Structure formats: structure tokens, C-alpha cells
Image (tube, rainbow, N blue to C red):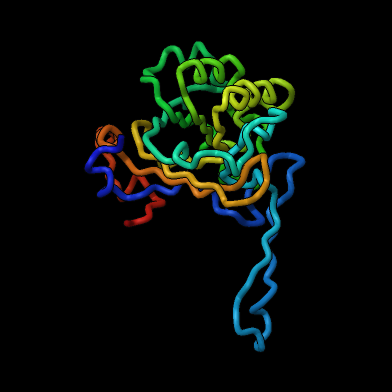
Length: 241
């Protein structure tokens, strides 16, 4: 459970802003935003039309995204998307995160695990970078066996492009482990946080964009202090309570 002091900590926005410049996975719809009211002096209100895919920006993958007959987005218990999580430092990984890498880290049966990689330097770029760091199928199996119910990463796909990436997704989703993709962890220190991550209420089975927020818990605050930074200069996207 979150510490008693966590409610006093500021929220850190780890969501990608949605705009025509938002990076999209190859083959997915680009984000399109069009002003439909407000251009004319006769318009009394400002309204925009938004077109995008269900896996645009920061988003959740429901089991039905890959697993036929898997749990659909509207069936997900939202309490699974709110609670304590671990931001795991994987920035040393150049290509992938596998089971051997994860076995060498201190992961104390975390229910929610967010993988911070060098992707955090890429996620804000408009062009898709095929050299992103990904989670291997055996790494996915390791986290599922550990008891994770949600695994997140700081790029648009948790798995490698191609069949191996599908296997990573299936390894997690077939075991009812939710996937959170498109995170911006560039301003987040490794440690313990409270995660708040709610999808849009869209009646589709596969997934939806989310607004993802972190609230530092005591360990994360210690990590920030040990880096010689302060809340003002290490977390640039704060939302004050």
C-alpha cells in the first residue's frame, strides 16, 4: 500500500502528449487533430475532431489484443491499474531485457513493474526508431512467474518487431498480465511509486490510450535525493495536487 506520506507528493505525468507529431507504431493510424468549430467568428465554441488508433501514445494492451477470447478492455478491473509499482532501471540494456538480466535485479514480487530503458530518450521523437530496447519472451515469462499483473515499458511496443514481439505479448497477455506501453520515464528515477493509469472508456476489446501518473513513495524520494537532485529539477512534468 502507498505510504501515508505519498498523498503529499506531487504527481509525475508519464504520458505522451497526443498530437500529429506523436510517434506511432508502423502500420498504426497517425494521430490527426482537426479544428471543426472555432475557426469562424460565428462559432461560439471551440471543438476539435480527434482521429487515432486505440494504441496511440501511452496506452494499455488488454489480453484480447493478442489472445483470442482473452479478457476485453471493458472487463478489466480498474483497481489493477492503480496502486504501488516499481520503476526498474534497465538503462544499461543495449538491445533487450531478458530473464537473465531481470534475475540479476532486486524485484520483490512487484504487482506492477515499469521498465525504464534508454528508450526514454527516443519516445518523444516523431520518427519511429526500430532499434528500441524490448522485453524478450523469456523476460516476459520471468515477470509473469514473479507474479506481475502489469508490465510497462518506455516505447510503443514491449516486444521486438516481428514474431518474437508477438510471443512476448502473448506470454504476458495469455497469463492475464496487462501491458502498458508508450511511457515517458525520462524524468523518473528508479524506485517505488504509486501508479494511476486509467484508460479511456471506449467500448473496444483490444486497448485504449491512458493518462498515466506516478506519485513517489518514500524509496523513490530517497533515490531522487541520492542523485543530488530536487523535485523541481528532476521531475519536469509535475501536476500539483
